[in-house]
Length: 246
Image (cartoon, helix red, strand yellow):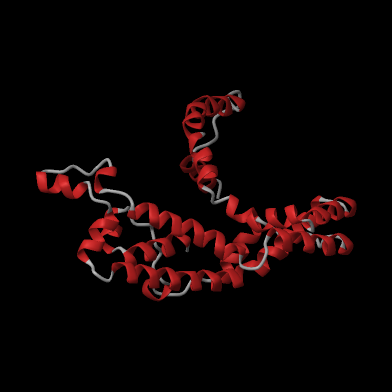
């Protein structure tokens, strides 16, 4: 859904930029694919991965609901996602065709146009671009608020139940006392947004080369853990043996 909204924002406000930026994979609506998905079956499978948990202690859950309200204040999801996507659109519009490795200018004219930002190119082609962008941002912000109103109550309930199982009443009281301070309220209001912060994203991406270097050794050690066991039977052979016994 987030990828779709980002693609819609870029495509609506900046169609030619959207043509250059790799498009997200969007699953076609059920009406275009045929029968609607069986959501009961989907949730039944989901329950296998994340089975329902026992209800937490009522006293701890009551305290944990205060904690959850501090961590997920009203409107925080819409603001966090909206800020992230708005920033991404701004950065896309500040890019040039020459920023993409596959972009190769074949003529002086194309070389000059490749040095323009998408924003400059779009403003030159569309006299209504700035107004179109302003109205699109406003509409997307409203939609994020609608999504947020649906998601947040459920997220707060999930956070409260998880927190209530992990912390006792004394700990929860201490946590809530902190969130009642100015510093605690400031942290709660920014908590979700921190996970979309460019510095955090860059830190995670910076770890990827080291993770890739570790991967071959990890795979070897994982394989070595069962190397002393006989090879598992092949599916085809197992099926044939089973059929021959009947």
